[in-house]
Every structure is written in structure tokens, then in C-alpha cells.
Length: 178
Image 1: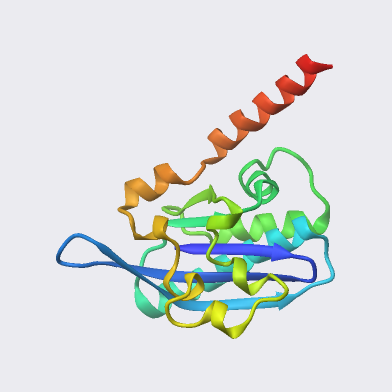
Image 2: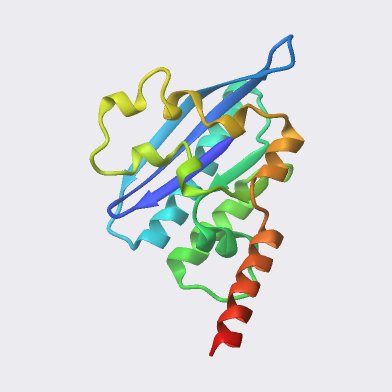
């Protein structure tokens, strides 16, 4: 599982390995993570984090042979930029969206995760301490949704189609209230 995040001044990503135990439960642990300082806007840093996640996923797959199930971000904007390529974008967004689409394994799904359930969150937030990133932390052991079966994870996270429906409904509601 690859997760990414962006904030003011930085972007970050992590790759978590999931292993199914004999009792059917899943064990999850951070394989690798990366942060990068950036002077871009927060939405662009979110996209940068997603590109970092794809880069890490490629490296993790080549080293371990694990398959990537899902790429999760807490940025709705990033999901739209990466999935819906019908609209022209400025060079920064275009290049990173193309990178994600080119190098993300075809079997991997792109999903939206709630910000409070994003395990990549600690590496981009100010005021975090080492305790927020040690063994036993959500950064190190992942979130509870990451310890579910493949289909349960995919149905738990929000797909592009579901996200589009939700946003279209918000727009329609705004139009109706005017």
C-alpha cells in the first residue's frame, strides 16, 4: 500500500507491506518512506507526495516483489488530476500526473483516504515528534483499514467515481440553494 500527503513546505509518502498471517489477519509495517521540501502550493505538494509514493512503490516492487494494491492520498484534487486527464494542466501538474500514470502499476487502484486516516500524515505535519514515527505508531504500523483484506480496503477507500458523484452532488446542492 502506498500513501502520500502534502502540506505547506513539504510532501511525503510511504510504502507499507501487508502480509496475511496463518490466522487470516493482516500484519502491516512501513517498508520505506520519503519526504521532500517544496515551495509549491499545498495542492501541488499533495501531487508531489503522490509522485514520491509512485517512485517508492517502483523501488519497493523491484526490491521485494510485492505487488502494489492501492495508492491512497487524502487530496481530492490530486485524485482528479491523476485520474481525469481530459483537462489541460500547467507544466508542474501535467508532468507529475503523467509520471504517476506512466509508472503506477496497472493493477494498482488510486483511491482517496480521509485525512485523519492517512498514515503518511505525520511526516508532513509541523509539531510532530519522533514519537509520532516510532515502532507502534500509525506511521510505522499503518492504519486499521490497511489490515483488512484486499476487497475490503478497496471498498473502504473512496474511488474516483464515488468522489466525482459526491462533488457533483455538492455542486448541485450549492446551485439549488442560490
